[in-house]
Length: 453
Image (cartoon, rainbow, N blue to C red):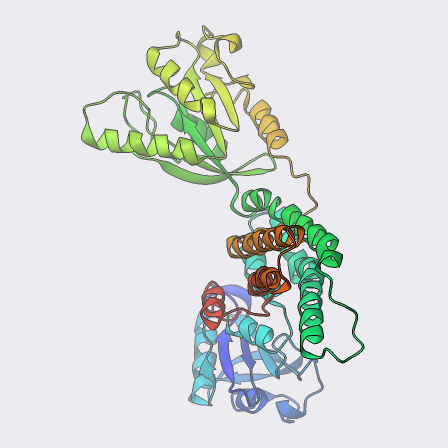
């Protein structure tokens, strides 16, 4: 028997509709004590999955809303248990009063992610699907939402389950031959499994290769704006953001720390980092900001080097240019073209050099096109892109274990030595699929969720 939990499943701001959600064996009885059908019937006798009109009362029995409720019977529910949703007007006061009345009637407060956790524990969702729910909630782009929706639909699970099942078959075959030598069971020959393990390891490797794209899909492109003081770095961030996010002055050293802002540049989501101008300074605070600028440059997916094109390059410019040499993706921006141009694209050792003016916004469309091409999404956002760092780590460990198992087979090692690596691969994959996940890991996963989901 599962106790009934309740929570507000919509935001606590004024909205058109707010939802009180309950799940558990007694949810209909508890809801019936605070929600009265206009027909006079009991909510427990209401038709399955049908919205019914009624009144919601607070703990004192006062009517606080005319609203709708729907009772859905197990097992065909989100959690796999009986559920009730009361759909009110979206007043935070009404929702809070209704929730308090449900608690007094016997419901317990839902913890973070407890509805989805119950769905996982009751077999309604695989762990990959459950984790994708929070990714869908937090998606900040249509592509990220599409990929998360695909994973909620089971795309990732369908890729991993056959591999896990084949490893299970391998282990069970070995133990069957070992435990029942007199039975008519095919001989266990490790070499017959080599091609299977090789093919499955390749599948895991291909999935791992999508993670960098998945990280960018989920988090956006980390873009560090670097250059010496007063070349227009903060003005560039403001121009892309569309408002004055950063203070801009003619005084060198105005930006003394990194400033972050998430913006859309065309179709690409950027996590722009405006850095302190890199130069030699005796100011201890500015020096700390410059150190963070160097760190941002090293960690960025994209480096946007900005110079003042209206004056010749300086030694500070050249030092910063050398720092950008190791960046995998870098674009040089010759700023202040509205003041005339002294610096030419041929003066800068970058694959892409774009003249711009942050004052007139000239060149920003070219920058948008360049970034879009540089980070083009070549994999369909259908759920097949790996975005979760926990899953990435587990699949990486499974892949490495399978490589060791394959090597052991090729070196004609004993079956028990090979199966040690196979079982490690299964355990790592089980952390993704939910087959072998530990309770502490499960708790951490669902702590990411909001209450009510």
